[in-house]
Image (tube, rainbow, N blue to C red):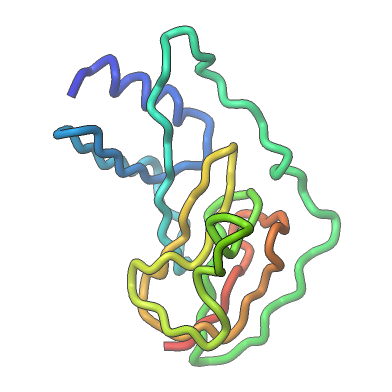
Length: 160
């Protein structure tokens, strides 16, 4: 891989909440894991990073409107000894589907497999797919579609 291209990718990620990147460009493949993953959360992310288009592109990310902090705390999910939550790895906007015209990735009662996409959290204009780290069944969707979410906020409640 071209070292300059790698430096450009790392510069584009600097200052963002992206902690993992899988990128394939023709025969080249790169997998980056930055920083330390959040402790004890059940989530997995893939960030879709566009390739740098020109050397004149600005290297500084612009703040997203989704970074506004909500003044009212989210209601706590029902505690169940068998269930677990999938939490947001970013401050951003929660989406249940890839576009308004498509069906939600999962519904209440859906059985999910490890690695299956549950939702998207848009952070800093990047669409981050949140995947199940373990198999389970969706018991509750804790966030409304299009709502802002905070780092660590529970998104789904699942049971094994």
